[in-house]
Image (tube, rainbow over all chains, first blue to last red; front, side, top):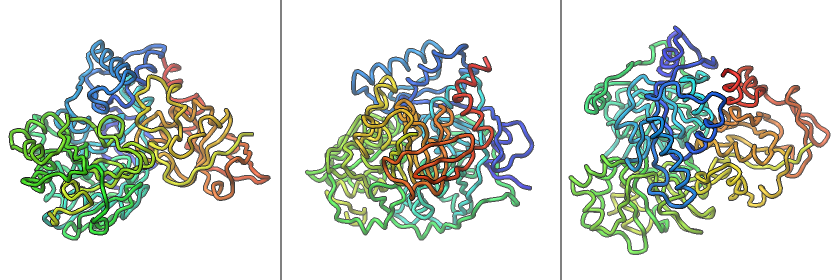
Length: 415
Length: 157
């Protein structure tokens, strides 16, 4: 029986010839990412162990990205704990360099790796064919101490992509469409695998945006076939694939979906669920108070370019706060070089330092009671961006920017 | 016997414990804000041994282990739902909080009902009726029986 990409990566990490869905294996992890959302708790648990030690410090990457710069005395204590521990144990450490997944993609992840990240959007690493999955701090600690963990082999949903996205339609629209189709738990416990001719029309930034959001359908991981685009990205960043697995022709998929990229339209996910998607045109005219362009999902240079193209020479609506947050310092510098930051600032946007920002609702751009946000962030859960009685709509960089100009939800073709 | 606190479907981890409390230094400092957006009185009312009963996809969203941890810290004996989101489910087992799938319970109980859970039999008893629960895979039950993943780590040491 053939195996899927997910099964092959798990088999390699478990040191066995074959695995099948439902099996539980002990696997060797390649990399362990943790951020300031939970690391302070991991450290407390580590310090209480009978025999605290780190299996292989070279596997660990710690990134302060959620509340940067620090917003309170309590956060400062948690950050300091993480910073001091990282220094003492010589753990690879970033602070303010960007959102963890973007930093990981730019500096660490490669094809065929099995990676635990203490953040649900770790599934983004599938953009280069790595098996990334989100875990909590207990899982993280166990893996940190032993270098290993237990993993239940997931079933795989295969998405066969064909065609090309129309102009003005983005990877964000595609993945929101898919989540709307299969539902918020449509891929629960499963791997989502993407391949087909259509994949070749999507660059790495698109692929990250797609894989990143798969957890919003409940997926354990997302995986894209490794191709020339992947290899070129890795080479540019000084890395080689560990493995370049493809699913076998006779691999067993729980279901195969055929997706015609040319039929995708601009999409908006309405409050309070990511699968609550509609054609963006249906939301046109909805009042907004704030717009956010950034996050691990859509804060890359391609997204900033898409926004800048819409807003160049225009102004942010006087009743709207428009926050623009590059996903990493590298993205920020590139945007400076290209004049994109200037374009946003001249339009009246608030340009912030790279971090999770509005997407995580605790540090920057928090919204108040009854306020409405349109966002390229990852989630629109109730209260996600601030007050429990506030509203978040999710959309592409172009739609978010167009809405910031209009003061109400709008698509880029209306500008 | 414990009381039921009833929730609906797609309860995400932001509802269980919101982002603004996650970087508080300890779980004990966070637990007062559990379910703040859905039931602000929950943390004050829940007693050790009580249950959370929910519909489909409980615990979806973020990987924040603080979500099962605040429930455990408040003394919630088990979360019983029609289905769970993956990361919440795994985190709960790892910290030793029983998470139990029971397809028929949610529609048949109300907030405040008194319930009894027998983990060994895989049965809950409430309002004079019994409901069968799905058993955990042996491997995961083993982690739970040891009191969570870290307990097993200390044993191995």
